Image 1 (cartoon, helix red, strand yellow):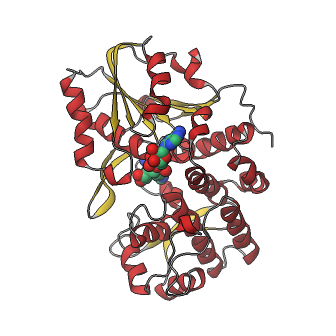
Image 2 (cartoon, protein in one colour):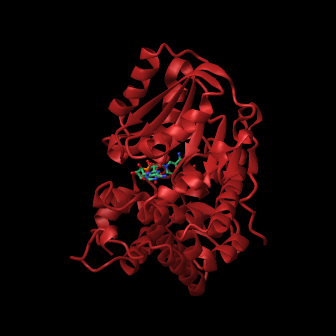
Image 3 (spheres, protein in one colour):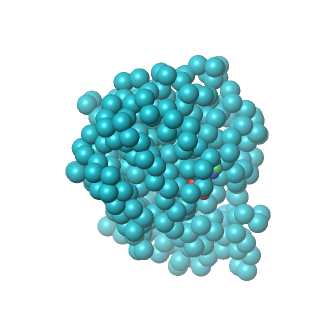
Length: 378
Ligand code: NAD
Ligand code: GLY
């Protein structure tokens, strides 16, 4: 399998009829005229970013947008998952109304998954729907959150609980934007790259295994291929099941255990990708317990997660807390927890598993009581 050359722009079309759109992937995309071709021209546009990403990248984006829109404003939201809430979302509506934005106004989400999810939700709601473009700046956002139209904010009682399915009109994955990303965030994004192998493409897993270190050192050819293949797989899954009636849930491989770790440790202590990385090791071990994969397969997943700089051992939590937290997972049905399980043919399935098997896997994969250091200190 040959990696894509990043000298060229890769284009993946996500097939959703009149809601379909292109995902563009490559280096230097912000400065490439092809990136902007075919986007709607309008009197106004608003770049939504945050106070960490805006100072680094907003000027370069706004300079390009001047050719498409009469007036381009920029709104910097406070950075962080803690601000993925109604109050911060309202700042977007405040600015749109203050600048007399109309139905043709285009929103541009410049940031990671937090900015992308909030901007998408604002676009879904403002005047009952205006166009938005994703310009993802984290690896996690380039390979996952910017694609597929899940938009949301958090509620104090649950993550991503208030939201809408609302597709962007284009996704622009400029690999150069990743150059300023902190190493810990790059590692967290690798968890979402790793997940696509076991659930959908064992050839991709074979390709990725020896290249994790290259990805961590921002090898652009390797990154270009990893982002492209991840987006191809996600685009196919979303095209088949846009609103998660069934298949799309496989994209949550590792997330049932991962969400429990994130919530149990307190949001922000473990990054989402760190928790998902560890959760994938646990979900693969669960698959082994059900004879779907062998121990060597679990070892391969664990080794990739570890090579990505992510924890592979979960923090200690009482069994009752694990079960209680996992019951809040969106895949749970009538109180029954459902897990994404993988087999050794690159297929995934979502189903309930007996509590005693789940608890056995948890006890094998967690630290002993009294040692629950945050992921960042491992
Ligand atoms: P994030 O958006 O919080 O970004 C991580 C950190 O990196 C932030 O501090 C951000 O300011 C900073 N950052 C972003 N780009 C940077 C750059 N180029 N240079 C320097 N700093 C940069 O986190 P994330 O991991 O991108 O996304 C996590 C969010 O995505 C969660 O809210 C999660 O729920 C959501 N998510 C959504 C989907 C979906 O399908 N919609 C899928 C997965 C995750
Ligand atoms: N990140 C999971 C999904 O988009 O469905």
